[in-house]
Amino acid sequence: MAHSEIEWTEQTWNPTTGCTKISQGCKFCYAEIMAKRLKAMGVSKYKDGFKVRLHEDVLDAPKQWKPSVIFVNSMSDLFHEDIPLEYIQKVFKVMNECTKHQFQVLTKRSDLLAKYSEHLTWTDNIWMGVSVENQRVAKRIDDLRKCGAKIKFLSLEPLIGPLSNLNLIDINWVIVGGESGWKARPIRESWVIDIRNQCKNANIPFFFKQWGGVNKKATGRTLEGQTYDEMPVDFKQLA
Image (tube, rainbow, N blue to C red; front, side, top):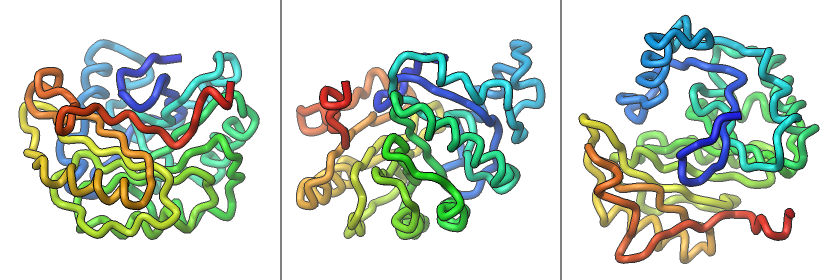
């Protein structure tokens, strides 16, 4: 079990690692940078760097953990074209069996998500999301709507352009965040305020993760003097 510093989750579980870039949001991928560091440190799981690899040895790991919110594949994309449907089904089987956890799955490959959805079992503890960094890839939201997840969410991070007039029908949660790192592309406050207002008007929980930049700790995560930590589930009711 790996504790996560990602603000909207608690733990990470990586039954696959590695990925390839498919859109502008991938340009400065944090997972790729981390994989290279772990390879240099001699971590066996990353001996092939950021090449897509399956790790069946950790499939059953969540069965041993205490109830938690788990981000699935923080170091990969479960719907990568090099990951067989049969393996994705194995990952889903574990999530289906571990109803004590809430699993958060995030993909940029919404076309494969839509294609595979009918072949997967969607228990209520599986949250499914898509990454949308700008208007060019907003179609991913339409693909997300086609899947069988009870909770569907958007990760608008790294937000590198405005996203006005989003179609938020059947969307249950929205996360927004700026890019971080020494080459981080800028985020504008007006973009974030617009998305927050769209969520408010649609009565959708809004989570503002970070402004980002070279020093994300210094820039913080408050918007107009407020911290937004809204979630789609009341965890007190799940306890």
